[in-house]
Length: 335
Image (cartoon, rainbow, N blue to C red):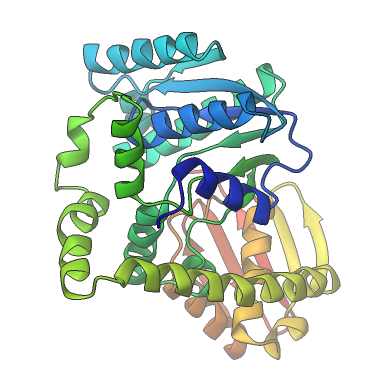
């Protein structure tokens, strides 16, 4: 017999220690079925004494669909009222940001959404932010990254917990699938908002969701389970690589300034490729690179430069890297 939805969430939260030290939790609620189910289930777990934290519902209005976006905000506000939960909201200008920064709409929306949620978390004195990513999202992410070219880090997919801008993000729904979520909503009489843009097949992610994954599952019913298992295996490998890379980065660091850093090339030549990529990633993050536009090809290009002891290349996020016989120099430049 299938485990009840709330029990699945509680088991996942407990085994992954997602809410250790979290006394106040911001729930990122868009109004869709996933986040509505998350808010409802976590509220019941808190009221039932199974989780010991206070909840705050947060919403970001992307202003992309006019009155429909405003309707989403009002829907989530009403949901917070019905749950007698504190509510935070923010309206952001995605189209304006995309035009100014030359981002895609998807990239601008993600960046502004994260910034808004982090502000809401801070203003409401929360210890973490919960998002409603689930098992099907995990599978979509892995397929998308495989298509773009990725390494062990990319194949980790969506991690149960992680920090962005020093703020803890947790994913309490990763153990459940889209079918479980919709069944829970129906069983509890929950309504949700439909975003018509999710049906647009132009974005790659939507084509994976609506066309590719259903085809894979039709041919291989356990495809999502297999991708989930791949993610867990890669996470174990990735954790070891990150630990080794952090030690090596500290040893290799020759100089650090506001918009540049220099590493001793000798430390990078002999290290395994998967550790090398993490050392480079750490350097890029130090300079504020977002890494969303980086692929395995970028890291392999730099690896070849380091092996050859020469080269200069411009990478995404306005980062220029120069390699000489002795050093690897990262520089952040302005457009």
